[in-house]
Image 1 (cartoon, rainbow, N blue to C red):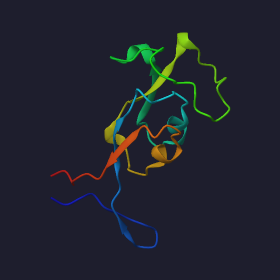
Image 2 (image 1 turned 30 degrees about the horizontal axis):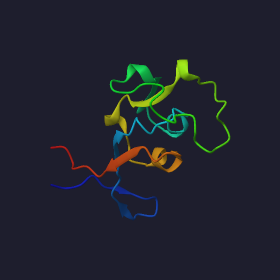
Image 3 (image 1 turned 45 degrees about the horizontal axis):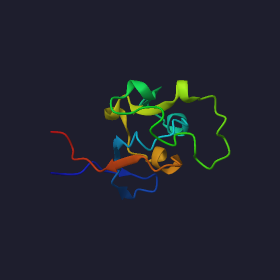
Length: 112
């Protein structure tokens, strides 16, 4: 099957890689990916709403970026969730900005 391809403004062909998964156990809920995403792909949710995660399980606020006082506490720990993965355009901005490297991206086949 053919992979989805795009063209740069200069006419060069490229293969975009679309977001497939978020490693929520590593996610610190900083919201950087949410802010940089040009589409409505992500949703910041409370960590205890995600099955298998608990606020005390991870170092969700230890990101070495000096912004540990981001408004989240143990009671309101947040994590990123895929809201609408099918709206992803494969730009990869979320993966480039993520301090914990939580994203998995893959090229996709053209839907028939």
